[in-house]
Image (cartoon, rainbow, N blue to C red; front, side, top):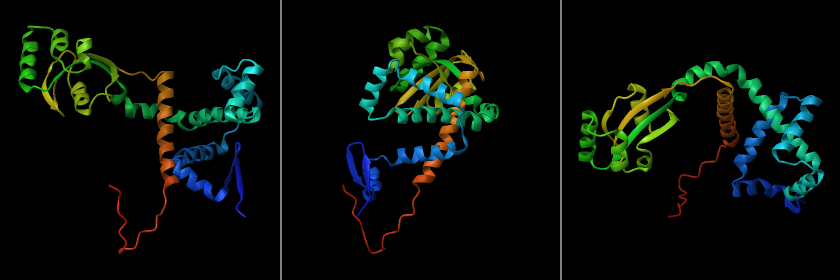
Length: 254
């Protein structure tokens, strides 16, 4: 007789559980959490940390009274013990991130800095090459401001802001635009270039170097954690599928 797994009010044969996770597209999430738990194997919390983790977690959920707590638990199908376990696990995850990648932040920051610097720039785009060239020469001659021409002629959402975009990280725009912004000084108007169906004119207006402050540290630690986690998920999902016989042809639905 197949072993039965109880999930809430439902009883599921254990042998069917893996297929259900695949069918419901929940397997990657399960593998993700298993990978995290393996990473947390050596992470411990003392009593003070546990108490603070639970208090902080309850605060984020705005559970200020016992009545609110019981209502929330009932809605989520959880017990108090299970909720506390979730709270402590979240604290362990943050502790794992800091202990593992915190010491690597400085070197990672130096490698990523050119992509993390921010820029404010102006953009005009049109699908008409003749119009793009005319606008470019008007700008060079100073006949009209970039803002006025963008409001009147640019065919994207940037027309609403007079062409002004940012501040954004230099890695955020299209790579071709990002390369222009990285290689031109502020105020220099770049000649029209073709970008997909558009012809674009770009002018970098202000460069904002990034700083390794607390907020940036948290961002970079999170990035390194996610990179590690994606690798662990990929390894966890890797499976050696048996090849089909050469004579068997499985049609693909059209």
